[in-house]
Image (cartoon, rainbow over all chains, first blue to last red; front, side, top):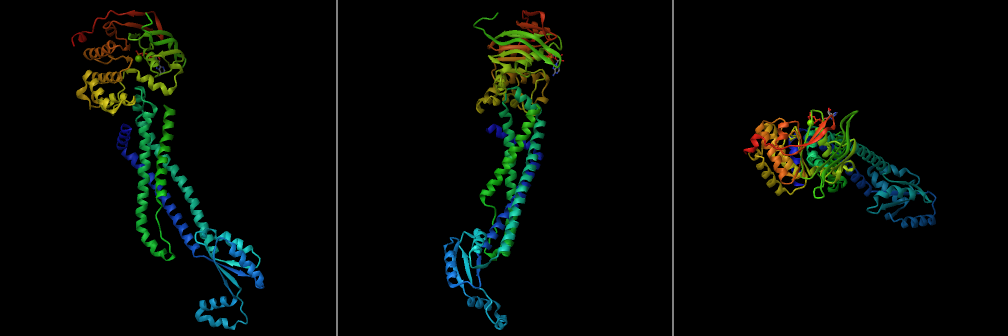
Length: 291
Length: 241
Ligand SMILES: Nc1ncnc2c1ncn2[C@@H]1O[C@H](COP(=O)(O)OP(=O)(O)OP(=O)(O)O)[C@@H](O)[C@H]1O
Ligand SMILES: [Mg+2]
Protein backbone atom coordinates (compact mmCIF):
# COMPACT_ATOMS: atom_id res chain seq x y z
CA UNK A 1 0.00 0.00 0.00
CA UNK A 2 2.84 2.29 0.93
CA UNK A 3 4.48 1.32 -2.34
CA UNK A 4 1.32 1.91 -4.35
CA UNK A 5 0.87 5.29 -2.69
CA UNK A 6 4.40 6.26 -3.66
CA UNK A 7 3.79 5.18 -7.23
CA UNK A 8 0.59 7.22 -7.37
CA UNK A 9 2.33 10.32 -6.03
CA UNK A 10 5.21 9.86 -8.45
CA UNK A 11 2.71 9.56 -11.29
CA UNK A 12 0.93 12.71 -10.22
CA UNK A 13 4.22 14.52 -10.08
CA UNK A 14 5.22 13.29 -13.53
CA UNK A 15 1.89 14.39 -14.95
CA UNK A 16 1.58 17.64 -13.02
CA UNK A 17 -0.21 19.57 -15.72
CA UNK A 18 -2.89 16.98 -16.45
CA UNK A 19 -3.47 16.46 -12.77
CA UNK A 20 -3.71 20.19 -12.16
CA UNK A 21 -6.33 20.56 -14.89
CA UNK A 22 -8.38 17.77 -13.37
CA UNK A 23 -8.10 19.11 -9.85
CA UNK A 24 -9.16 22.57 -11.02
CA UNK A 25 -12.14 21.09 -12.86
CA UNK A 26 -13.26 19.19 -9.79
CA UNK A 27 -12.69 22.26 -7.61
CA UNK A 28 -14.81 24.39 -9.93
CA UNK A 29 -17.59 21.83 -9.96
CA UNK A 30 -17.57 21.61 -6.17
CA UNK A 31 -17.49 25.40 -5.89
CA UNK A 32 -20.45 25.96 -8.16
CA UNK A 33 -22.51 23.21 -6.63
CA UNK A 34 -21.43 24.33 -3.15
CA UNK A 35 -22.38 27.96 -3.83
CA UNK A 36 -25.79 26.81 -4.93
CA UNK A 37 -26.27 24.68 -1.84
CA UNK A 38 -25.13 27.56 0.31
CA UNK A 39 -27.75 29.78 -1.27
CA UNK A 40 -30.52 27.19 -1.01
CA UNK A 41 -29.73 26.34 2.60
CA UNK A 42 -29.70 29.98 3.66
CA UNK A 43 -32.81 30.85 1.68
CA UNK A 44 -34.52 27.94 3.45
CA UNK A 45 -33.38 29.36 6.78
CA UNK A 46 -34.70 32.76 5.83
CA UNK A 47 -38.02 31.25 4.87
CA UNK A 48 -38.25 29.55 8.24
CA UNK A 49 -37.42 32.75 10.04
CA UNK A 50 -40.34 34.39 8.27
CA UNK A 51 -42.62 31.53 9.10
CA UNK A 52 -41.62 31.72 12.74
CA UNK A 53 -42.98 35.15 13.42
CA UNK A 54 -46.17 34.21 11.68
CA UNK A 55 -49.61 34.87 13.12
CA UNK A 56 -52.73 33.74 11.42
CA UNK A 57 -55.76 35.94 11.50
CA UNK A 58 -58.91 33.85 11.41
CA UNK A 59 -61.80 36.13 10.45
CA UNK A 60 -65.26 34.97 11.48
CA UNK A 61 -68.56 35.05 9.59
CA UNK A 62 -70.53 38.22 10.23
CA UNK A 63 -73.58 36.54 11.73
CA UNK A 64 -71.85 33.86 13.80
CA UNK A 65 -73.72 33.16 17.04
CA UNK A 66 -72.12 33.04 20.47
CA UNK A 67 -72.66 29.28 20.48
CA UNK A 68 -71.05 28.89 17.06
CA UNK A 69 -68.06 30.89 18.19
CA UNK A 70 -67.56 28.78 21.34
CA UNK A 71 -67.72 25.66 19.25
CA UNK A 72 -65.19 27.05 16.79
CA UNK A 73 -62.87 28.10 19.57
CA UNK A 74 -63.12 24.61 21.02
CA UNK A 75 -62.06 23.12 17.74
CA UNK A 76 -59.14 25.51 17.37
CA UNK A 77 -57.94 24.69 20.87
CA UNK A 78 -57.76 21.03 19.91
CA UNK A 79 -55.29 21.73 17.13
CA UNK A 80 -51.81 20.75 18.30
CA UNK A 81 -50.05 23.23 16.01
CA UNK A 82 -51.60 26.19 17.79
CA UNK A 83 -49.62 27.75 20.61
CA UNK A 84 -51.89 30.64 21.64
CA UNK A 85 -55.29 31.77 20.65
CA UNK A 86 -56.62 35.24 21.23
CA UNK A 87 -60.11 36.46 20.49
CA UNK A 88 -60.32 39.87 18.90
CA UNK A 89 -63.72 41.47 19.14
CA UNK A 90 -65.03 44.08 16.70
CA UNK A 91 -64.16 46.80 19.19
CA UNK A 92 -60.69 45.46 19.78
CA UNK A 93 -60.14 45.29 16.04
CA UNK A 94 -61.21 48.89 15.62
CA UNK A 95 -58.94 49.90 18.46
CA UNK A 96 -55.97 48.23 16.80
CA UNK A 97 -56.76 49.83 13.49
CA UNK A 98 -56.98 53.22 15.06
CA UNK A 99 -53.64 52.84 16.74
CA UNK A 100 -52.10 51.67 13.46
CA UNK A 101 -53.50 54.64 11.58
CA UNK A 102 -52.53 56.98 14.44
CA UNK A 103 -52.70 60.47 12.91
CA UNK A 104 -55.29 59.50 10.32
CA UNK A 105 -57.51 57.75 12.83
CA UNK A 106 -59.98 60.60 12.54
CA UNK A 107 -61.02 59.20 9.17
CA UNK A 108 -62.62 56.28 10.99
CA UNK A 109 -64.88 58.57 13.00
CA UNK A 110 -67.24 58.98 10.08
CA UNK A 111 -68.21 55.29 10.00
CA UNK A 112 -71.80 54.63 10.95
CA UNK A 113 -71.02 51.17 12.23
CA UNK A 114 -67.94 49.05 12.79
CA UNK A 115 -67.25 47.14 9.54
CA UNK A 116 -64.47 45.02 10.98
CA UNK A 117 -65.15 41.31 11.50
CA UNK A 118 -64.50 39.40 14.69
CA UNK A 119 -61.34 37.35 14.57
CA UNK A 120 -59.00 34.96 16.32
CA UNK A 121 -55.33 35.66 16.31
CA UNK A 122 -53.47 32.35 16.19
CA UNK A 123 -49.82 31.87 17.04
CA UNK A 124 -48.23 28.75 15.67
CA UNK A 125 -46.26 26.51 18.02
CA UNK A 126 -42.46 26.74 17.77
CA UNK A 127 -40.95 24.15 15.49
CA UNK A 128 -44.15 23.54 13.58
CA UNK A 129 -43.79 26.56 11.31
CA UNK A 130 -43.52 24.38 8.25
CA UNK A 131 -47.08 23.27 8.85
CA UNK A 132 -48.49 26.77 8.52
CA UNK A 133 -49.93 26.23 5.06
CA UNK A 134 -51.80 22.97 5.77
CA UNK A 135 -52.94 24.34 9.11
CA UNK A 136 -54.43 27.39 7.45
CA UNK A 137 -56.21 25.19 4.96
CA UNK A 138 -57.77 23.11 7.72
CA UNK A 139 -58.93 26.13 9.67
CA UNK A 140 -60.49 27.59 6.56
CA UNK A 141 -62.73 24.49 6.30
CA UNK A 142 -64.29 25.04 9.70
CA UNK A 143 -67.89 26.37 9.77
CA UNK A 144 -68.07 29.99 10.78
CA UNK A 145 -64.67 30.97 9.33
CA UNK A 146 -65.00 33.68 6.75
CA UNK A 147 -61.39 33.83 5.71
CA UNK A 148 -57.89 33.45 6.94
CA UNK A 149 -54.98 35.78 6.41
CA UNK A 150 -51.25 35.42 6.80
CA UNK A 151 -48.16 36.14 4.70
CA UNK A 152 -49.26 33.28 2.54
CA UNK A 153 -48.37 34.54 -0.88
CA UNK A 154 -45.00 35.73 0.20
CA UNK A 155 -44.12 32.44 1.73
CA UNK A 156 -45.48 30.48 -1.17
CA UNK A 157 -43.65 32.49 -3.76
CA UNK A 158 -40.40 32.50 -1.93
CA UNK A 159 -40.79 28.84 -1.04
CA UNK A 160 -41.43 28.07 -4.69
CA UNK A 161 -38.32 29.97 -5.69
CA UNK A 162 -36.20 28.10 -3.18
CA UNK A 163 -37.67 24.83 -4.46
CA UNK A 164 -36.84 25.79 -8.05
CA UNK A 165 -33.30 26.68 -7.07
CA UNK A 166 -32.97 23.38 -5.28
CA UNK A 167 -33.99 21.53 -8.46
CA UNK A 168 -31.61 23.60 -10.58
CA UNK A 169 -28.98 22.78 -7.98
CA UNK A 170 -29.57 19.05 -8.44
CA UNK A 171 -29.37 19.41 -12.22
CA UNK A 172 -26.13 21.39 -11.94
CA UNK A 173 -24.69 18.84 -9.54
CA UNK A 174 -25.42 16.10 -12.06
CA UNK A 175 -24.01 18.12 -14.94
CA UNK A 176 -20.82 19.14 -13.20
CA UNK A 177 -20.26 15.69 -11.74
CA UNK A 178 -20.52 14.22 -15.22
CA UNK A 179 -18.08 16.81 -16.55
CA UNK A 180 -15.67 16.08 -13.70
CA UNK A 181 -15.92 12.32 -14.26
CA UNK A 182 -15.14 12.98 -17.90
CA UNK A 183 -12.07 15.01 -17.01
CA UNK A 184 -10.71 12.49 -14.55
CA UNK A 185 -11.35 9.70 -17.03
CA UNK A 186 -9.45 11.64 -19.67
CA UNK A 187 -6.49 12.33 -17.43
CA UNK A 188 -6.22 8.73 -16.38
CA UNK A 189 -6.65 7.61 -19.98
CA UNK A 190 -3.83 9.83 -21.17
CA UNK A 191 -1.57 8.62 -18.38
CA UNK A 192 -2.50 5.03 -19.14
CA UNK A 193 -1.75 5.35 -22.82
CA UNK A 194 1.54 7.03 -22.11
CA UNK A 195 2.33 4.01 -19.95
CA UNK A 196 0.97 1.27 -22.20
CA UNK A 197 4.33 -0.36 -22.54
CA UNK A 198 4.98 -0.28 -18.83
CA UNK A 199 1.59 -1.80 -18.03
CA UNK A 200 2.23 -4.53 -20.59
CA UNK A 201 5.61 -5.33 -19.05
CA UNK A 202 4.12 -5.38 -15.56
CA UNK A 203 1.62 -7.97 -16.74
CA UNK A 204 4.38 -10.07 -18.28
CA UNK A 205 6.34 -10.24 -15.05
CA UNK A 206 3.32 -11.43 -13.08
CA UNK A 207 1.65 -8.27 -11.78
CA UNK A 208 -2.05 -8.72 -11.08
CA UNK A 209 -4.58 -6.33 -12.56
CA UNK A 210 -5.23 -5.08 -9.06
CA UNK A 211 -1.56 -4.30 -8.53
CA UNK A 212 -1.51 -2.40 -11.82
CA UNK A 213 -4.72 -0.48 -11.19
CA UNK A 214 -4.34 0.48 -7.55
CA UNK A 215 -1.99 3.45 -8.16
CA UNK A 216 -4.44 4.84 -10.71
CA UNK A 217 -7.30 4.59 -8.25
CA UNK A 218 -5.25 6.23 -5.53
CA UNK A 219 -4.38 8.97 -7.95
CA UNK A 220 -8.01 9.53 -8.94
CA UNK A 221 -9.19 9.53 -5.32
CA UNK A 222 -6.47 12.03 -4.44
CA UNK A 223 -7.46 14.24 -7.36
CA UNK A 224 -11.04 14.11 -6.08
CA UNK A 225 -10.07 14.88 -2.50
CA UNK A 226 -7.73 17.73 -3.40
CA UNK A 227 -10.21 19.18 -5.88
CA UNK A 228 -13.07 18.87 -3.39
CA UNK A 229 -11.13 20.48 -0.54
CA UNK A 230 -9.86 23.29 -2.80
CA UNK A 231 -13.37 24.02 -4.05
CA UNK A 232 -14.82 24.09 -0.55
CA UNK A 233 -11.86 26.14 0.68
CA UNK A 234 -12.35 28.82 -1.95
CA UNK A 235 -16.08 28.85 -1.28
CA UNK A 236 -15.37 29.31 2.43
CA UNK A 237 -13.10 32.28 1.71
CA UNK A 238 -15.80 33.82 -0.45
CA UNK A 239 -18.25 33.20 2.38
CA UNK A 240 -15.99 34.92 4.90
CA UNK A 241 -15.75 37.99 2.66
CA UNK A 242 -19.49 38.32 2.06
CA UNK A 243 -20.93 37.05 5.35
CA UNK A 244 -20.43 40.43 7.05
CA UNK A 245 -22.44 42.29 4.41
CA UNK A 246 -25.15 39.68 4.43
CA UNK A 247 -25.48 39.87 8.19
CA UNK A 248 -25.79 43.64 7.98
CA UNK A 249 -28.58 43.38 5.40
CA UNK A 250 -30.53 40.47 6.79
CA UNK A 251 -29.57 40.45 10.45
CA UNK A 252 -32.65 42.46 11.30
CA UNK A 253 -34.85 39.49 10.56
CA UNK A 254 -33.15 37.49 13.29
CA UNK A 255 -31.46 35.56 10.54
CA UNK A 256 -27.78 34.63 10.36
CA UNK A 257 -26.04 33.72 7.13
CA UNK A 258 -24.27 30.41 7.74
CA UNK A 259 -21.79 28.24 5.87
CA UNK A 260 -22.52 24.70 4.74
CA UNK A 261 -22.81 22.31 7.67
CA UNK A 262 -19.81 20.02 8.13
CA UNK A 263 -21.85 17.04 6.92
CA UNK A 264 -22.37 18.81 3.59
CA UNK A 265 -18.66 19.66 3.42
CA UNK A 266 -17.72 16.04 4.09
CA UNK A 267 -20.37 14.95 1.60
CA UNK A 268 -18.95 17.26 -1.08
CA UNK A 269 -15.42 15.93 -0.60
CA UNK A 270 -16.64 12.34 -0.63
CA UNK A 271 -18.67 13.06 -3.78
CA UNK A 272 -15.57 14.53 -5.41
CA UNK A 273 -13.67 11.37 -4.52
CA UNK A 274 -16.45 9.21 -5.90
CA UNK A 275 -16.27 11.28 -9.08
CA UNK A 276 -12.53 10.56 -9.23
CA UNK A 277 -13.11 6.88 -8.66
CA UNK A 278 -15.77 6.75 -11.38
CA UNK A 279 -13.55 8.55 -13.86
CA UNK A 280 -10.75 6.11 -13.16
CA UNK A 281 -13.10 3.17 -13.38
CA UNK A 282 -14.43 4.18 -16.82
CA UNK A 283 -11.06 4.78 -18.38
CA UNK A 284 -9.53 1.62 -16.90
CA UNK A 285 -12.42 -0.40 -18.25
CA UNK A 286 -11.91 1.05 -21.70
CA UNK A 287 -8.18 0.50 -21.44
CA UNK A 288 -8.49 -3.12 -20.37
CA UNK A 289 -11.00 -3.75 -23.13
CA UNK A 290 -8.65 -2.27 -25.72
CA UNK A 291 -5.53 -4.16 -24.61
CA UNK B 1 13.34 -40.11 -20.90
CA UNK B 2 10.59 -39.39 -18.40
CA UNK B 3 10.58 -41.07 -15.03
CA UNK B 4 8.29 -40.90 -12.02
CA UNK B 5 10.94 -38.88 -10.21
CA UNK B 6 11.04 -36.33 -13.02
CA UNK B 7 7.52 -35.56 -14.12
CA UNK B 8 7.23 -33.24 -17.11
CA UNK B 9 7.08 -29.66 -16.02
CA UNK B 10 5.98 -28.65 -19.52
CA UNK B 11 3.66 -30.64 -21.76
CA UNK B 12 2.23 -29.80 -25.13
CA UNK B 13 -0.35 -32.09 -26.67
CA UNK B 14 -1.30 -31.56 -30.33
CA UNK B 15 -0.89 -27.80 -30.04
CA UNK B 16 -1.69 -25.56 -32.98
CA UNK B 17 -1.45 -21.79 -33.08
CA UNK B 18 -2.88 -19.85 -36.00
CA UNK B 19 -2.50 -16.26 -37.09
CA UNK B 20 -5.51 -15.94 -39.35
CA UNK B 21 -5.26 -18.82 -41.79
CA UNK B 22 -1.52 -19.26 -41.31
CA UNK B 23 -0.33 -21.85 -38.82
CA UNK B 24 2.63 -20.56 -36.78
CA UNK B 25 2.68 -23.85 -34.85
CA UNK B 26 1.17 -27.00 -36.29
CA UNK B 27 0.25 -30.05 -34.20
CA UNK B 28 3.13 -29.91 -31.73
CA UNK B 29 3.36 -32.55 -28.99
CA UNK B 30 6.20 -32.25 -26.55
CA UNK B 31 7.23 -33.14 -23.00
CA UNK B 32 9.95 -31.39 -21.06
CA UNK B 33 11.02 -32.81 -17.69
CA UNK B 34 11.87 -30.64 -14.74
CA UNK B 35 15.46 -29.40 -14.70
CA UNK B 36 15.88 -29.97 -18.44
CA UNK B 37 17.99 -27.63 -20.56
CA UNK B 38 16.34 -27.27 -23.95
CA UNK B 39 17.21 -25.31 -27.06
CA UNK B 40 14.43 -24.53 -29.48
CA UNK B 41 15.92 -23.84 -32.86
CA UNK B 42 14.95 -23.47 -36.48
CA UNK B 43 14.94 -20.87 -39.23
CA UNK B 44 13.38 -17.46 -38.89
CA UNK B 45 9.59 -17.68 -38.82
CA UNK B 46 9.69 -21.31 -37.67
CA UNK B 47 7.56 -20.52 -34.62
CA UNK B 48 10.18 -20.45 -31.84
CA UNK B 49 8.93 -17.25 -30.25
CA UNK B 50 5.35 -18.37 -30.67
CA UNK B 51 6.12 -21.60 -28.80
CA UNK B 52 7.63 -19.69 -25.86
CA UNK B 53 4.69 -17.28 -25.80
CA UNK B 54 2.25 -20.15 -25.44
CA UNK B 55 4.04 -21.25 -22.28
CA UNK B 56 3.47 -17.99 -20.37
CA UNK B 57 0.13 -17.25 -22.02
CA UNK B 58 1.54 -14.34 -23.97
CA UNK B 59 -0.73 -15.99 -26.52
CA UNK B 60 -3.36 -18.67 -26.13
CA UNK B 61 -3.10 -21.82 -28.23
CA UNK B 62 -5.69 -22.22 -30.98
CA UNK B 63 -5.99 -25.94 -30.42
CA UNK B 64 -4.53 -28.54 -28.11
CA UNK B 65 -3.41 -28.64 -24.50
CA UNK B 66 -0.56 -26.75 -22.87
CA UNK B 67 0.29 -27.77 -19.33
CA UNK B 68 2.94 -25.83 -17.40
CA UNK B 69 3.93 -26.77 -13.86
CA UNK B 70 0.66 -28.60 -13.39
CA UNK B 71 -1.51 -25.78 -14.74
CA UNK B 72 -3.70 -26.35 -17.78
CA UNK B 73 -3.37 -23.07 -19.63
CA UNK B 74 -6.31 -23.56 -21.98
CA UNK B 75 -8.69 -23.70 -19.04
CA UNK B 76 -6.95 -21.17 -16.87
CA UNK B 77 -8.97 -18.34 -15.35
CA UNK B 78 -7.37 -15.06 -16.40
CA UNK B 79 -7.07 -14.01 -12.77
CA UNK B 80 -4.58 -16.83 -12.30
CA UNK B 81 -2.32 -15.79 -15.18
CA UNK B 82 -0.12 -13.70 -12.84
CA UNK B 83 0.43 -16.82 -10.70
CA UNK B 84 1.67 -18.67 -13.77
CA UNK B 85 3.97 -15.84 -14.75
CA UNK B 86 5.49 -15.64 -11.29
CA UNK B 87 6.72 -19.21 -11.72
CA UNK B 88 8.34 -18.36 -15.04
CA UNK B 89 11.25 -16.04 -15.60
CA UNK B 90 11.31 -14.60 -19.10
CA UNK B 91 14.21 -13.05 -20.97
CA UNK B 92 12.75 -11.23 -23.96
CA UNK B 93 14.63 -10.73 -27.16
CA UNK B 94 13.97 -6.98 -26.95
CA UNK B 95 14.65 -6.96 -23.15
CA UNK B 96 11.31 -5.28 -22.36
CA UNK B 97 12.71 -3.08 -19.61
CA UNK B 98 10.63 -0.12 -18.49
CA UNK B 99 12.58 2.82 -19.86
CA UNK B 100 11.36 5.31 -17.26
CA UNK B 101 12.30 3.19 -14.24
CA UNK B 102 15.76 2.59 -12.89
CA UNK B 103 17.56 -0.74 -13.15
CA UNK B 104 16.76 -1.39 -9.50
CA UNK B 105 13.08 -0.54 -9.94
CA UNK B 106 12.79 -2.74 -13.02
CA UNK B 107 14.10 -5.74 -11.14
CA UNK B 108 12.21 -4.94 -7.93
CA UNK B 109 8.93 -4.79 -9.83
CA UNK B 110 8.78 -8.59 -10.04
CA UNK B 111 8.96 -8.93 -6.25
CA UNK B 112 6.61 -6.03 -5.60
CA UNK B 113 4.05 -7.61 -7.90
CA UNK B 114 4.43 -10.91 -6.06
CA UNK B 115 3.80 -9.16 -2.74
CA UNK B 116 7.27 -9.71 -1.26
CA UNK B 117 7.78 -7.66 1.91
CA UNK B 118 9.43 -4.31 1.32
CA UNK B 119 12.59 -5.05 3.32
CA UNK B 120 13.28 -8.35 1.62
CA UNK B 121 12.97 -6.75 -1.82
CA UNK B 122 15.97 -4.43 -1.59
CA UNK B 123 18.24 -7.21 -0.31
CA UNK B 124 17.21 -9.66 -3.02
CA UNK B 125 17.45 -7.12 -5.81
CA UNK B 126 20.89 -6.00 -4.71
CA UNK B 127 22.06 -9.57 -4.50
CA UNK B 128 20.84 -10.49 -7.97
CA UNK B 129 22.25 -7.27 -9.46
CA UNK B 130 25.59 -8.21 -7.92
CA UNK B 131 25.35 -11.64 -9.52
CA UNK B 132 24.84 -10.16 -12.98
CA UNK B 133 27.45 -7.47 -12.33
CA UNK B 134 25.07 -4.53 -12.60
CA UNK B 135 25.23 -3.39 -9.00
CA UNK B 136 27.07 -0.20 -9.87
CA UNK B 137 24.42 0.85 -12.36
CA UNK B 138 21.41 0.23 -10.13
CA UNK B 139 20.08 3.78 -10.49
CA UNK B 140 20.66 4.05 -14.24
CA UNK B 141 17.74 4.16 -16.67
CA UNK B 142 17.76 1.31 -19.22
CA UNK B 143 18.16 3.53 -22.31
CA UNK B 144 21.48 4.72 -20.92
CA UNK B 145 22.85 1.15 -20.84
CA UNK B 146 24.55 -0.84 -23.58
CA UNK B 147 22.73 -3.80 -25.13
CA UNK B 148 24.77 -6.30 -23.12
CA UNK B 149 24.08 -4.40 -19.90
CA UNK B 150 20.38 -4.26 -20.63
CA UNK B 151 20.38 -7.96 -21.31
CA UNK B 152 22.04 -8.60 -17.96
CA UNK B 153 19.37 -6.52 -16.23
CA UNK B 154 16.77 -8.55 -18.11
CA UNK B 155 18.40 -11.74 -16.81
CA UNK B 156 18.43 -10.33 -13.29
CA UNK B 157 14.74 -9.55 -13.55
CA UNK B 158 13.98 -13.03 -14.87
CA UNK B 159 15.87 -14.68 -12.00
CA UNK B 160 15.02 -12.48 -9.01
CA UNK B 161 11.65 -14.13 -8.39
CA UNK B 162 13.27 -17.56 -8.13
CA UNK B 163 11.13 -19.06 -10.89
CA UNK B 164 10.87 -22.76 -11.69
CA UNK B 165 11.23 -22.20 -15.40
CA UNK B 166 13.37 -19.81 -17.39
CA UNK B 167 12.36 -18.89 -20.94
CA UNK B 168 14.88 -17.02 -23.06
CA UNK B 169 14.16 -15.76 -26.58
CA UNK B 170 17.45 -15.16 -28.42
CA UNK B 171 19.18 -14.20 -25.18
CA UNK B 172 22.46 -13.59 -26.98
CA UNK B 173 21.03 -12.38 -30.27
CA UNK B 174 22.43 -8.88 -30.26
CA UNK B 175 25.40 -9.40 -27.96
CA UNK B 176 29.12 -9.72 -28.63
CA UNK B 177 30.61 -13.06 -27.69
CA UNK B 178 31.92 -11.88 -24.30
CA UNK B 179 28.52 -10.55 -23.22
CA UNK B 180 26.86 -13.65 -24.65
CA UNK B 181 29.12 -15.85 -22.54
CA UNK B 182 28.25 -13.89 -19.37
CA UNK B 183 24.53 -14.26 -20.04
CA UNK B 184 24.80 -17.98 -20.86
CA UNK B 185 26.81 -18.50 -17.71
CA UNK B 186 24.01 -16.95 -15.63
CA UNK B 187 21.46 -19.16 -17.35
CA UNK B 188 23.59 -22.25 -16.74
CA UNK B 189 23.88 -21.43 -13.07
CA UNK B 190 20.12 -21.20 -12.85
CA UNK B 191 19.97 -24.66 -14.45
CA UNK B 192 22.50 -26.04 -11.99
CA UNK B 193 20.33 -24.86 -9.11
CA UNK B 194 17.54 -27.07 -10.46
CA UNK B 195 15.74 -24.74 -12.83
CA UNK B 196 14.19 -25.75 -16.13
CA UNK B 197 15.50 -23.79 -19.12
CA UNK B 198 14.14 -23.22 -22.62
CA UNK B 199 16.24 -21.11 -24.96
CA UNK B 200 14.99 -20.15 -28.41
CA UNK B 201 17.87 -19.39 -30.75
CA UNK B 202 19.25 -19.99 -34.21
CA UNK B 203 22.81 -19.49 -33.03
CA UNK B 204 24.46 -22.90 -33.63
CA UNK B 205 27.59 -21.79 -31.88
CA UNK B 206 25.53 -21.15 -28.75
CA UNK B 207 23.71 -24.50 -29.06
CA UNK B 208 26.98 -26.41 -29.28
CA UNK B 209 28.31 -24.69 -26.17
CA UNK B 210 25.98 -26.44 -23.74
CA UNK B 211 25.07 -30.13 -23.32
CA UNK B 212 21.37 -29.88 -23.98
CA UNK B 213 18.37 -31.25 -25.72
CA UNK B 214 17.63 -29.49 -29.02
CA UNK B 215 14.20 -29.18 -30.56
CA UNK B 216 14.08 -28.28 -34.26
CA UNK B 217 11.12 -26.38 -35.61
CA UNK B 218 10.56 -25.89 -39.32
CA UNK B 219 7.53 -23.99 -40.57
CA UNK B 220 5.70 -24.51 -37.30
CA UNK B 221 6.21 -28.29 -37.18
CA UNK B 222 8.69 -30.47 -35.34
CA UNK B 223 11.33 -31.34 -37.94
CA UNK B 224 11.83 -34.82 -39.43
CA UNK B 225 14.67 -35.63 -37.08
CA UNK B 226 13.36 -33.35 -34.36
CA UNK B 227 15.70 -33.82 -31.47
CA UNK B 228 19.40 -34.05 -30.87
CA UNK B 229 21.59 -33.84 -27.85
CA UNK B 230 24.56 -31.53 -28.02
CA UNK B 231 27.94 -32.40 -26.61
CA UNK B 232 28.61 -29.08 -25.01
CA UNK B 233 31.83 -27.35 -25.98
CA UNK B 234 31.80 -24.31 -23.75
CA UNK B 235 31.80 -20.88 -25.35
CA UNK B 236 35.41 -19.69 -25.43
CA UNK B 237 34.84 -16.70 -23.16
CA UNK B 238 32.79 -18.64 -20.64
CA UNK B 239 35.53 -21.19 -19.94
CA UNK B 240 37.72 -18.48 -18.47
CA UNK B 241 35.48 -16.47 -16.17
N1 LIG C 1 1.34 -11.22 -34.22
C1 LIG C 1 1.45 -11.94 -35.35
N2 LIG C 1 0.53 -11.79 -36.32
C2 LIG C 1 0.61 -12.51 -37.46
N3 LIG C 1 1.56 -13.41 -37.71
C3 LIG C 1 2.52 -13.60 -36.78
C4 LIG C 1 2.51 -12.87 -35.56
N4 LIG C 1 3.57 -13.27 -34.82
C5 LIG C 1 4.19 -14.21 -35.55
N5 LIG C 1 3.57 -14.40 -36.72
C6 LIG C 1 3.97 -15.36 -37.76
O1 LIG C 1 4.09 -16.62 -37.18
C7 LIG C 1 5.23 -17.29 -37.67
C8 LIG C 1 6.14 -17.70 -36.53
O2 LIG C 1 6.62 -16.52 -35.91
P1 LIG C 1 7.66 -16.55 -34.72
O3 LIG C 1 7.86 -15.16 -34.26
O4 LIG C 1 7.20 -17.55 -33.71
O5 LIG C 1 8.96 -17.09 -35.46
P2 LIG C 1 10.42 -17.27 -34.88
O6 LIG C 1 10.77 -18.68 -35.06
O7 LIG C 1 10.51 -16.71 -33.50
O8 LIG C 1 11.25 -16.36 -35.87
P3 LIG C 1 12.57 -15.50 -35.56
O9 LIG C 1 13.71 -16.44 -35.53
O10 LIG C 1 12.65 -14.56 -36.72
O11 LIG C 1 12.37 -14.80 -34.28
C9 LIG C 1 5.90 -16.33 -38.62
O12 LIG C 1 5.53 -16.71 -39.95
C10 LIG C 1 5.32 -15.00 -38.31
O13 LIG C 1 5.19 -14.22 -39.47
MG1 LIG D 1 11.48 -15.08 -32.59
